[in-house]
Amino acid sequence: MTEELDRALQTRAGRRVEYLSITWTSLEAIIGVTVGILAGSVALIGFGADSIIEVASSCVCRCHASLARVKRRVAVRLNSNALHADSHQSDICAYLSVILLLGLALNAALGWWWAEPIAALAMLPIIIREGIAGWCGKACSHAHF
Image (cartoon, rainbow, N blue to C red):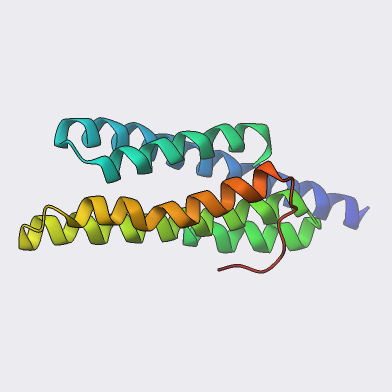
């Protein structure tokens, strides 16, 4: 009985984490695309578009580094490969955020207009790698970047 109760509590915790992740990523998508259009930033629009894809993935069964750790912990308790794979996506989103913010900061602080397109290009290998892995149906390993 204790094992069933523990599993129910862990499942509830997993759902809460997923709802938080979907909410966060939805806000990321809306703000990224909107501000990107207003600012004329290709990097922001690209980041927002990636977030839209992530939300779609989350709705099927699935954001940043603070969420990834929690997701991995709950995934281990539930022995859930799906939740573990989602934690990997949260890691990737965190890396993309760092690249984006670096490009935006260089543009804002130093006036380097070209930093944002370079940031967008720097995101491409990560996005392409994940897209190809998903297209080929590769299962997420437990290794992270």
